[in-house]
Length: 539
Image 1 (cartoon, rainbow, N blue to C red):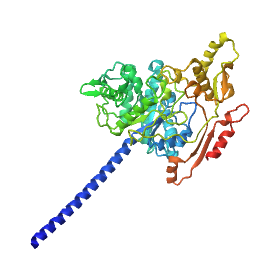
Image 2: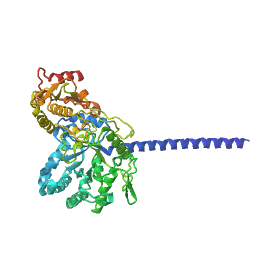
Image 3: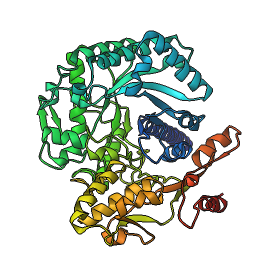
Image 4: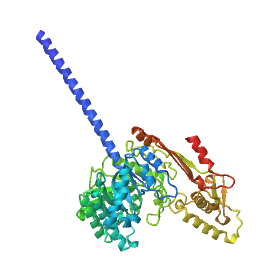
């Protein structure tokens, strides 16, 4: 009996030890799994950055932009402009940065001597002094897109520039010598006859130069950079709209051997993979330096379609889905764009190129999405802080203007064209959200956009007597939003997410304010007092 009791006791003790061991093993496994999942989530989020381009009449404060980026959980940013105030705003932010040598600046680096000087001054000295975490520099943005309209000399400058910059960087001290130089290209450098990705190769106009560029990239270990405009690629290939989205529920697909393509992103990406393979660079990495969906200026462009695109795109990135040709491949990509650019040239990409921002010009989100990819079904964009609108004053068409009736229409059209040439009327064009406005509505919208772009100066609402200033919002009359310009940005640099970083470093917040009020004069009222009063209230 005692032996039996001892046996039972031993068995129970062993069983308890076994259970405890198993319990600890499960907890340890789950802990490591959750830690791994968390790290993977952070890593994936870090591979999706955002473009910030400033080709706009109104520019949000750089310090405010940095806080918007950080507040949305983004860790990477590509800058198209690198002037002093922009660079300084990123000091100490920790953001991984990609900078750009603009096409018009190619002449600054078209010789070995010039490139050495440029790298030493604009990269080594600037990045080190400002404590910037720059990993990549894009030398030229789509320089071959308008190949038929540029000179032979310019084309050679483009090729030489990337070579000289790539030679100059390794001669710099660490960590500058680790920066990779690349060049961004659009899909129009590929053959236009592509019906499936395996058809792809570089077109005859650029093939020789692209091979020379690829040799430079390959020698330095740099990736090829590509820009995508999904909704435009659909039209070019005569593909249906649903093929532009990652939740494509249409029966349309593209078969390419053993691979099936269900969306335009995979189609374009793998087309470049094939082009690289055919030219002997099959192992070269590809980064997507621009990818996005516009919200206006095109029949496919609105906030709803943009939100649908980004939700699918971010989910794809979060899951490391890769492409049919490169499954389970992590892709580095940069959303285009943080904000709208109402001064972009519409000749080559159409009116929609001015409406790629996920924020409008005031820093207000156009739709909601989680850029950290932690919530692929919802999410919320952080709005800009400290944005102050101009006074409630609009410029509209004056039907009571004293002008000969026979001349009225001709003069109106003339003034309408002048207004649009110096402001942004792309929403009024075919495919735009306001192309159904009445004749008078079109005139009033154009007049007001010009008026706001010129800081509400009275002379900017003359139009040979056909314009008039009103304090009654015309948005109700014409059933569309008539925008107000921003008068000032009131923002404490060092608040918000940037403030948390500075506080962790023991730094003090620095107050930085700018105002356009001194440029504005309004009859009977000086708007200079407005931002000052608001500053007192906000700060």
